[in-house]
Amino acid sequence: MTHTKYIFVTGGVVSSLGKGIISSSIGKLLQARGYNITIQKFDPYINIDPGTLNPYEHGECYVTVDGMETDLDLGHYERFTGIQTTKANSLTTGRIYKAVIDKERHGDYLGKTIQVVPHITDEIKRNVKLLGEKYHYDFVITEIGGTIGDIESAPFMEAIRQLRWELGKNAINVHLTYVPYLRAAGELKTKPTQHSVKELQSVGIQPDILVLRTEKHLSDEIRHKVAAFCNVDYDCVIQSEDLPSIYEVPVNMQNQGIDTAILRKMNMEVGPTPELGPWKSFLDRRNKATKEVHIGLVGKYDLQDAYKSIRESLSQAGVYNDHKTVLTFINSEDITEDNVAQKLAGQDGIVICPGFGHRGIEGKIIAAHYTRTHDIPTFGICLGMQMMVIEFARNVLGYTDANSKEMDEKTPHNVIDIMEEQKDITNMGGTMRLGAFDCILRQGSHVFNIYQKEHIQERHRHRYEFNSDYIKEYEQKGMQCVGRNPESNLVEIVEIPELKWYIGTQFHPEYQSTVLHPHPLFLDFIKTAIINK
Ligand code: GLN
Image 1 (tube, rainbow, N blue to C red):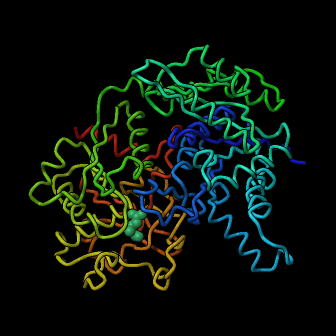
Image 2: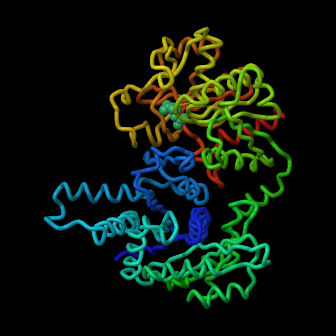
Image 3: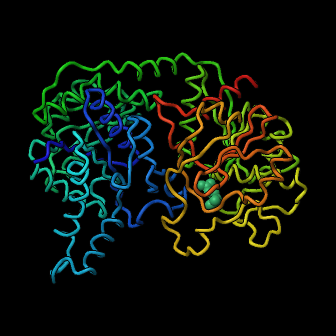
């Protein structure tokens, strides 16, 4: 018998209410009480993972240590709680069906007809319980993507219904809804919440806790009304008002006792309320930071969520430098030789963003050239690092036709080339160089001084790499290859030591920056940008 408790987080009324933030906050609060927790997400789409999805469709693709390409909510889970998620934390309808179909082809079902119920629902249940049974967490929080009533989420709802029946007090449902404010009537409306709960009840799930998203404070009267109409205890009707930062949410949830409500519902001892000391000092520092540091994000995806982890890492690093990070998106497609000075004007530092494909790369190269020749702190991440390398080849090494093989198959100066093991790959999904790899830093280099250690591990997501045939030329001319993979010798970091801060990483440091453990590269980059103001 397992001692693991399961919390299912579902959503109703509309999408984008912040189930990921609520799940992360619940995780954070239980963790503060000494429990070992993990958070898992089920996405109801058919893709095996979001790796092949355009960022416009789905925002950033977040990569776990073990190389799973996942939904950006996993980034919230890690940033809030400091846990490391894995493949087992991210599932989609596609992955569930694939597992079932593979088993069917293998003959595992012994002649049975394979159906959504019980085979698909059993596979969902297996993946929920796996975390509890295999890794012995105290709490497994499972967030279900989408909104109750969606056709695609029906098998997940049925699986939750069954699990709650099987697990009794060891499983609860937290349902997140929206209470709109009608300006013309001057009223907050609870009807959508009532309908959403009814929908949930119609598939056999009674919510234990309701979290109501609202732009205005909800009176006790409204909460009483929701409690009465939805069969939920009054103290289990929690409100989630708009707050200045997502990082305020755990404190707000704790003040309303969401964690004690969860423990009581599960017949667990409640005990004293934890302090959340370091978390509150982060918030305090954040609120006090009024001086601004301006960072330009040079990229092609004009969408907040596309560079989510980079944005979060930069603003966390701002807080730890007692500054407010003001981020400006600068579309690389619009950058030309003629307007680059004006486009980058007023920025204390520039991040050249990751990405795939040809669109917008010339603008990134022009930006890298401008910041290098004007000594503006510059951080190139993945494709951004590759663009720094190409710029240097074109303008310093004199190879005006230098390029990445990704962009120009026939370039005679392929300073960025496809990795050997990627050459024969034709399948696009989950086949990049993914997950955490070791990297050895050169003693005395800028990055070594920043990390204060020689051996690091960072997460990757790419097919192309720095072509090591050119290392000597680069180093002679001033761009140093200061981070190398100990097994393959791949170049993972380049820097120009003569400049204030000109560093490119083939990996994505943003995946490892958390609220309580901000990443040293972002901290130092922001520090330098502030000095550079
Ligand atoms: N497109 C580049 C590659 O595959 C960079 C990828 C990225 O920026 N994540 O190598």
